[in-house]
Image (cartoon, rainbow, N blue to C red):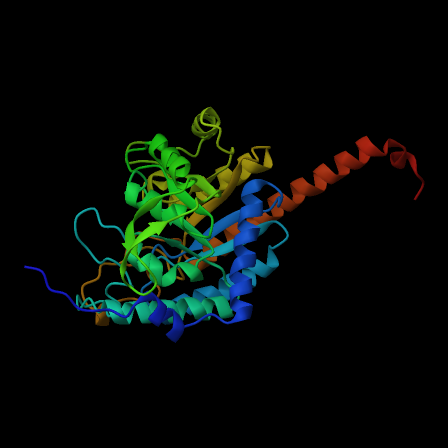
Length: 361
């Protein structure tokens, strides 16, 4: 048995919760900044940081305020993007995310979820906090794609033709993760596919079934997230992935997910992964363009039994680092990178102008 409930069209929702000219320019600028980091014309490191999934508006805004302050502090070296994942893939069953069940009670008020999600993202953009999201449903993407600076196709959908087609029409840089069993080729094939034009059946902005023609996404890139069997953030695994990218003439760029298989789903181990990756970048591996961290105000995760029993700002999905640990890690990385840049600059000065060493002070 199937039941239907009509939803507002994408254009109706976008008109009701609309971007102003300044906000549109901000999103376009952040997308370009991310693209420049991926291309190497911007030497900063990309950091996708935030909750595994969002479920509470107040905690999301509090996290955003803290992240904004930290982002300003470390902007010389890092570009911080906030995870605002409103859809969650489920291995079997479970809460599918704020977009689909915003009241956390199995009422599945999708129309309310669409409105709240769009309004929340607008609030973050007004704060000038760029947002990241995993795109799970092509139809929901039509409602929210104009608000996201960095998109992701997850491990469970990287091999999906539907998601590759969708990514080919998105205007922001889009990452493909290796699959849950560690298959990097599936993600690389996703990058290749999404870089090309596609024609497929979908919906238009009026919510009508339409033939969709896309022009390809030139800023697809790889995310290594480990697998159920092994991690893949070590130098050998990264080198292996870069060789696979090179074999198909794709740009040598990737990000490392410090969570999921790489942390063996133990949130405390994200710190170890993060520090290893930053050290590899500092030691010269500039093909690693950034990292992903799952982080909330409070550590760990909790089961969704009923709304009244929930702890504030604790993840409903994967366990997260707390804010204090996140802040300390990013500051540690900032000082490490700044120190390395200082050493490089001094070395270049000695090479370019060796006589300066002997100048009197």
